[in-house]
Length: 115
Image (cartoon, rainbow, N blue to C red; front, side):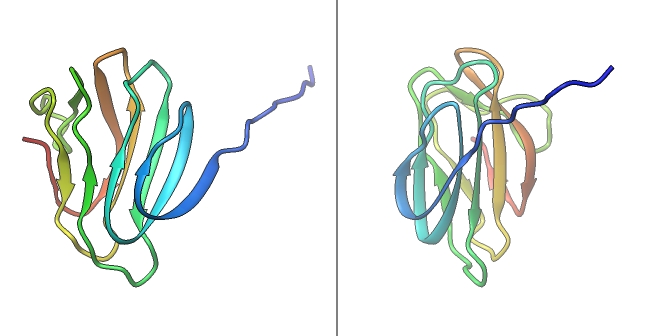
């Protein structure tokens, strides 16, 4: 059987401060960067990374009643708390909405704080 697979385009943009747009977006930080995901929903997916040759802290802003999964995959951080990278070149994280209160980590690079 043959068929067609349609894949929606993902928005890609660069800068420093940004509110991510559901359901999917990639953001590249050109300097110290704070991105704010929307309230999670199952299947939302976002990736944030430092631009080429950029070594700076990336902050995933706190989202009301939302928990970010720890990069150890051993539980979640505290609700309403931001997550930050260590500030190295190559820092990146991809998160996916699990439900209305959780973002799970799909992939990452660098050191991330999920307090």
